[in-house]
Amino acid sequence: MLWSTLVGAALGLCTSLCDAQLVVIVSAKSPVSSLSENQVADIYLGRMGQLPGGAQVVPIDLADDAANRAKFYRIVCGKSPAQLRAYWSKLVFTGSGQPPREVADAEAMKKLVASGASTIGYVDSSQLDASVRAVLTLQ
Image (cartoon, rainbow, N blue to C red; front, side):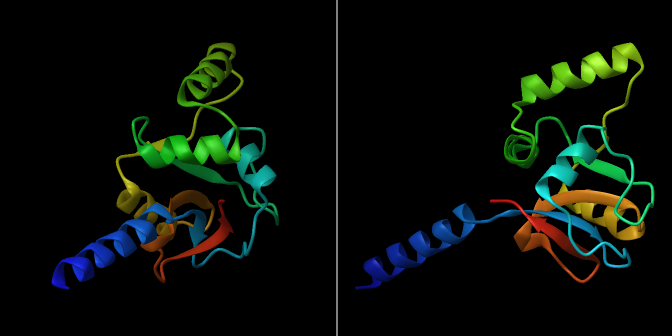
């Protein structure tokens, strides 16, 4: 009886962790209330430099080896880590753009996004708090 309860609890925990979703976030102070997946892709691929309303946008990225980074770019841009590196290498080489600023982890991203009204980032939905607001939930 106790064993089946523990197994059930463990499976429930795994299901809730496996179902965790990424959300695109802005500061709670930002006037932006929502963004489309296309807008987010354009921001993170350097094709759009402003948020709706005209404010300059500063995209923040997780470290290259972060699992949620690969998941984010696969969902939003349809690019693998290798494709993304090639994309930015070309833009940097031609002087056409610079990749988003990188931070070490999701906590650093959330802190940086919360501190500025024009920054944008992404975290696991379980990490949301009052300092940031989700503007897009990624499926």
